[in-house]
Length: 313
Ligand code: NAD
Ligand code: UDP
Image 1 (spheres, rainbow, N blue to C red):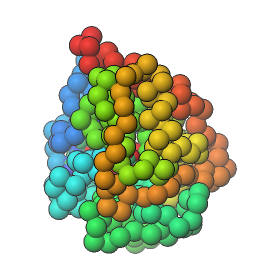
Image 2 (cartoon, rainbow, N blue to C red):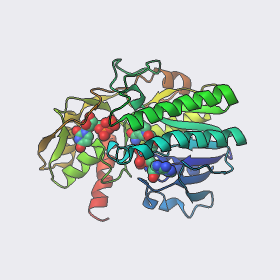
Image 3 (cartoon, protein in one colour):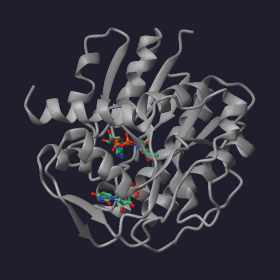
């Protein structure tokens, strides 16, 4: 092996699990982050490892580093955080992608882009297949993220065509697990924290919208399989095909925490996708990958993580 990996967004939720998995198989990791939604606590257990280095940097600025593999994960993923400064979110997606592609072009590194199921928008095709072009509002509150990620995909394939850069593109569907922020704002962390505190569970809209939740360990296996595979650029969906309504998720979390929380209704955010489920036929065929962790098992680990965090352990 002996790869030197650059992981942008490496101090974030998925990035930190990825850094850990790469180190565990004996590789070197350069973790780059501006700590917008990432935390040093996510990677502090890695700081003593001689094969791990931490770099504080913002991907909107160019950087020269020696790595033969680049995982471009820098970008806030929660709607609350990516809508906080939408112009910055577009910069991160577009300039960040360009800077990593230029680095890959100049060094010959392989570069993998963390794209998203959001490129399908509020999908008219269900479940979502990679050949579907999506249904995205170009000027709504989610556009900075959705369109930013779509431009990044376009850039990846343009650099592939024009400069023969060795690209990989994955479309990640809702992923959850330990190390999400307490104030992350995404549904699994919100519900787990609210239930553990016996506070009201905030259902946006009527809760009939669906999502398909992938446990982070499964996702990380898929990310590494895509980076390792030869002769396939993607895009490829990575997610768990199990589809649940938001109400079903709330009921599971309440049950698993034996919580006294009640459900409250909040307005449905603008352009909130009504349903989402990955078709993972391509990932199965090309990568031999599929998720193995059922929602109940992954939720147990996630709830236990937040329980320990909230009780100060
Ligand atoms: P996260 O917010 O926990 O992690 C993002 C990381 O990127 C953070 O550490 C943050 O500080 C860093 N970052 C943000 N802007 C940066 C910048 N300009 N320069 C350097 N670092 C920057 O989110 P996550 O869930 O770990 O998501 C990681 C990646 O995966 C993102 O690109 C996201 O779009 C993608 N993704 C995640 C999901 C999911 O369900 N978690 C789904 C689809 C796509
Ligand atoms: N959601 C909710 N309550 C919350 C947070 C989110 O009902 O406290 C809903 C949200 O409206 C969406 C789904 O859960 O329909 C997933 O939201 P999240 O922000 O986790 O991810 P995304 O919308 O990007 O898939």
